[in-house]
Length: 171
Image (cartoon, rainbow, N blue to C red; front, side, top):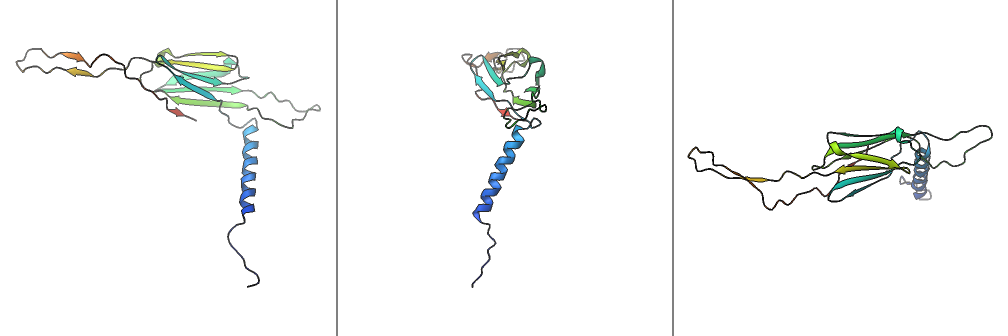
């Protein structure tokens, strides 16, 4: 056969599609209206779970931290600082602007009524203190004579059981 056709796409077209996707993602990620999520570090020790959230250029009044039904939510807004016109033209915009929301499911054994937050130098620090988890207890069984001789005994040496992971949800 002198002329043969094939239905399989050439590798060049797949590469072109991927390059176009990369450019589209880069453009959408850097526009002022694109959603952005500030980076977060979550650390834990024996006393607390602490979150460090980088939000440079955001005012403390533009940030809200809430806790509801075991969900910690940080939301805020970073205003765009771009001014075009009068001979000013932007060639590259890499900083993110707009509204943001980050949510984290809190594990059992934390006291959400004592959560604190501090904001300094573009970093929001949220501290979630831990509480002692209820310990299992052993119930003594009476001998059946109707007397109230059932006793409640503690379960062991009082060692505390604590959660070691912080499930994270992104919105």
